[in-house]
Image 1 (cartoon, rainbow, N blue to C red):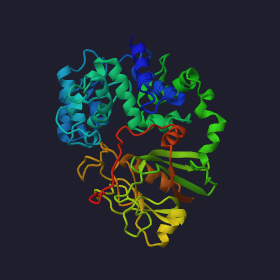
Image 2 (tube, rainbow, N blue to C red):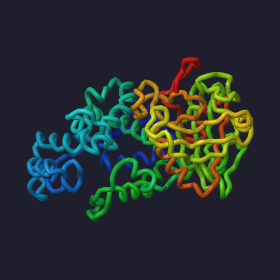
Image 3 (cartoon, rainbow, N blue to C red):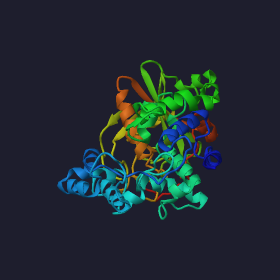
Length: 436
C-alpha cells in the first residue's frame, strides 16, 4: 500500500536527512496530511484547472497585457462548475507561463527552459516545485535509481520517490532543524512549505491549509509521535540550548552567540548555532578552513579562522561579489583566545559570509556544491546567510558574539543539535594555489 511505502522510505532515509526525531516526524506528516490527504496518495501533481480571472490575480506572469490574453484563452470561462475543466494541453500552457523563467516566480524557482513550468510543477507529498528544488532532491532520488530531472513524473508515479523528494525538500529548507522543539506550526514550518490558501475543513467549514496543518499537528501527529516524551524535548536536553557546545559561554538577556563548531583539522564542514537566552534562533552548516595550514595567527596568512571569542558587527559590503554572495558580511574582532592573539598580531578582515560553492561558476549562488574554503573566514550557505543577516539585524539591540570552537567529535555536535552532516561535504586538502 501507499502508506507502507511511505513509512518504509521515511525510515530508510530519516537519519541521513536529519529527520529521525519525533518533532520532525510530527511536523512532516502534519504538512503531508493536508498537502496529499489522509491516505498520503500522490495525485497527478499541481492542478492547473484554473478559472481565467483567478490566473491574473494569482500569478504575476498573467498580469501583463499578453498574460491577460493568455489567461482568457487558456483558463476556464466560468468559476463553477469546475468540470469539464481546462484541457491537459492548456494546463501545460498555463503552468509553463505561470512558472516561466522570464518572470519573477519562474526565476525564483530556478526554471531555465520553456517546459520547466509543467515538468517541475508541484508534485510529491509536499508539492516539490521548480527546477532548483528538483535538482537538490535529485541527489537523493538517484540513490533509488530515479533521475527526477530527466524524468520528473517519477515524483508522481513512484510513491517512494514522492516521499524521498519531499524529505529532501524538508532538509533543503532547513526544516529538519527548525522542526525540533517548536510547536509554532504556522510561523516556522508552514511558511517554508507553501502559501496559505483557502480550503474547507473536514466538516465543510471555510478554513485555510495553514490552519488545518496546525490542527492536524496539535490533535494528531504530535500525539502519535509523542513529542512531549521525545528525548530531544526533555528538560535535560533543552536546558543546554542557551550555551555554547563546550558550555564555556552562556547567553544572558543582553547577549547572543553565533557558535561555530568545527572539526579539529578543519578539512570538513561543521555547523553554526545562533542562540540567545530564549533558545536557538538558527542552525546551519559552516566551514572555517583557510587556504593555508598553520597560519592562524599570521597577518594576511590566510589560515583557518582562529578559535576563541569574537565581537561582531554587520556590514552591507561586497554585495554581488562571487566570494561573498549577496548578503554582506558579519565582521569580527578578537576578544579572547586565539581570536584575540590574531587580532593583536594584526590579522584582520575575518568575517562570516557566503558566496559561490564548490563546482559552481563565480556568479552562481545556488548552493548546489559544498562550502568552499576562504582566506580565513567562516563560510555558510547562501540561503543560511540570507536568514542569518535577517536574524542578526533583528537582534541588534543585544551584544552578538561569534565563538569559534573545535571538537574531535563533530558527529556528537550534529546529534546534539538535531542535525546530520552535509551530504555534499567532503574532505578537503590545503593548497598554496587555493582560492576562495
